[in-house]
Image (tube, rainbow, N blue to C red; front, side, top):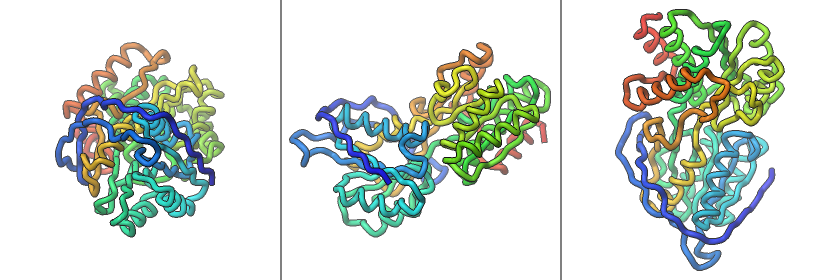
Amino acid sequence: MKTALERGDMGKVQLTRRTLLIGAGMGALSLVGCGKGGATDGGANGTRKVVMVTNVGGINDQGFCELSWKGLQRLRDELGYDVSYIESRLDSDYATNIDKAIDYGADFVWAIGFAMYDAVSFAAKINPDLDVKFGIVDAGTSGSSNLTGVLFAAQEPSFVVGYIAGRTTQTDQVGFVGGIESDNIYAFEYGYLGGVAYAAHELGKHIEVPRQYAQSFTDNAKGKSIAQKMFAKGVDVVYHAAGSTGVGVIEAAQEANKFAIGVDMDQSYLAPNNVLTSAIKRVDTALFDLTPQLIDGKIAGGQDLVLTLAEGEYMGIAEEHSLMDPQVYEDALALIDRIKEGDVVAPASNEEYEKFVSGLGMA
């Protein structure tokens, strides 16, 4: 376990106004506007303390946790917050590390990743009277009034990159590599499958999609091995939703001179000639925007905040598209607009996927 504390100078800026889709489970409750950040003047005792506890992916996972930390660093640099992180090495570290964050005197504790649900939910339930509030990214709440869940409709950008994969493949075989099976990762998988099916329908052909889970978010070698086997069997594009395991997928694409599709952040820097695009989840922007409102009570705890493509700030695809046919990129942007408008609904489960392809006449 590694603890790092980083602090910056005090500062105060006004947040950009935007709307957030607030939901309980999958349903929307209301729209909330952003106001000013909650940083206060007057030294350390007046500074808001925010501690982030990572999942086992760690702070340098080249994706999810790294992005989350960048969001907190913005809180430090632009709003003067006291921000820190505690890095978990094992699942068994989660509860202990959350306790450490509470002991540090945090005003807000972020748990990063659905695997931390049990630990943060328990901490919220047994500490209802403390000033500290809790949030978890990629998981719903337990109903505790001091716990907020932040969920991304990951099936939406996954649908778009699936469409890009379907329009790009030369072998009519594109793959998917997942980390640990869960409803969260199923949303990536079935959204991707839906996008591939949409492209196949548009092109009037069948595209195969072999899929495999590594059952790990930290096994680079396993991700590489799975992708190598896919590429050897004729797959020419592989999308991963597997954390650090997915870095191995990108390495395999580079070695085979095939395409990989990144996740969470633009991962083209890992292999500029082989990362076709990336499905973006701007966790950094979400944490920067939401934390002040949650601390100040402008957004009440005990509910789930569901972020979709419609907000325009929190999800999308990478701007880098030099490896892509320009027309495919333009068509992908048009597809994003159709999803935003509700004309296309990306599937997030097997049941929704089967209904989607049935609607395309492809059952």
